[in-house]
Image (cartoon, rainbow, N blue to C red):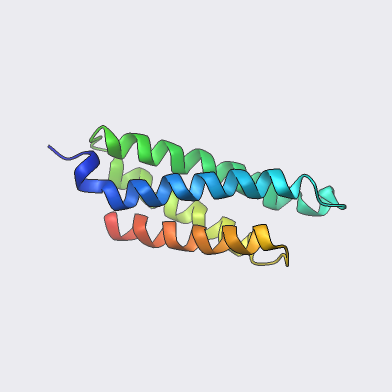
Length: 109
């Protein structure tokens, strides 16, 4: 059976990415021009949601783990691209974590 031990590296990357995306979204809400950060915040929330879902499905050995990880990688890459447009430290950190998660998901899928 596949599950947690099989996908541990990818699960860990997804959980770490979700936490950083949540942090980034929260920090973006504290910026002076929140409206300018709207797309970033939206992608942070989407990325966190798909990362949590991916980790959960991998941990239970779902037959759809590879499929969801492909989608997760796409959303992580979109989030990294958006976060890379901003000069804040939290966005830079998020962009890097999203890139690493996308790589882990692509390798797993």
